[in-house]
Length: 446
Image 1 (cartoon, helix red, strand yellow):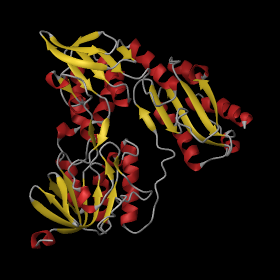
Image 2 (spheres, helix red, strand yellow; image 1 turned 30 degrees about the vertical axis):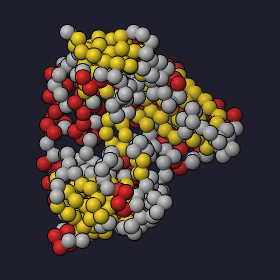
Image 3 (cartoon, rainbow, N blue to C red; image 1 turned 90 degrees about the vertical axis):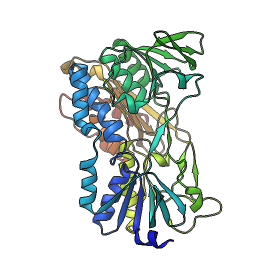
Image 4 (tube, rainbow, N blue to C red; image 1 turned 90 degrees about the horizontal axis):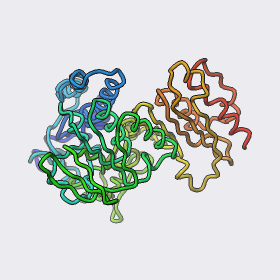
């Protein structure tokens, strides 16, 4: 290590200011010297380009606000992409914020914009980045990723959304609600293809009611400019004319050019950094260089959600401080904040290998709360492991599902016996009452 790097040596260097921000602050408060390296905005994607702006716009859409008012409110929530307050919080916690892209250049040393920083523990929390689909000509036509879609003031008249996952569904609803002519293209036969079928089917119906055109089971093949905008050709021989394409076809862990190979960390460009249950980075076959390397958030490829990243961040902090803690991913929620909202947790019935699942469901229209809300859309399904008699998965679509499904998340994580769950009393009238007949039916099947 050079003398300069020795002068800039820290107990911990954190690459990435999303979940890494939490890690850096907690470790600094615990007495460690910490440098946080961020090449964009301190705080990561969520507060500026993802969770906060999208949920704010969805809320404005539910309220029936104008686009101009919604954009103004979104920009206020995202602080007009100004991270100075967050950077100041880091400084107050004792964290040194280093602006720029960090790269490991040799064991124990990270380089940022030509300056070297030494470390004992390295934490990689660099997040993920949008994937551009292999569509001929797509680089020659006007496109957005979710970054632009959630920061620009423009309201395209005709918008194509590529991707029927959580991001594509939320953005489709946002732009359709404010008047864009939205066409969503998804190669799978339904939205949210990895989840229980009823979730994507119900959400598809909701999007169609808002005027969105869904092209399911077809892929985009080529794009070209036209005199009035662009034309996207599809695998079924049809085409769509639009003003812009919004790419929401997935994300990949941001691991390129981090220098991880120089310290023997195992990673894959598509799956991210391999970690064990303590979030310690797994070594390559040749082994690591002996330094402690940890990873948290999207870069691990474990669960691409802010709440999962924050959970892993807490696990990393404990282990860096010598207090062993293992992550348990059995009950990480998967939510889509559309109206109605979608919520899944634990095992999906489409990916339950090795388990003998018993399932039961209930339509929300049968609850008194649905009559109160004047909205009968929705359903909840619960999945139990017959061998152990506990819940292992759940799925729901309905108003406020992200709120009233929390008790089921806890039940899965705690492995609460069905005999206890069937004895829980819910307030009247709530959607939570829908659990009671479902749980009784599951108990009868075991």
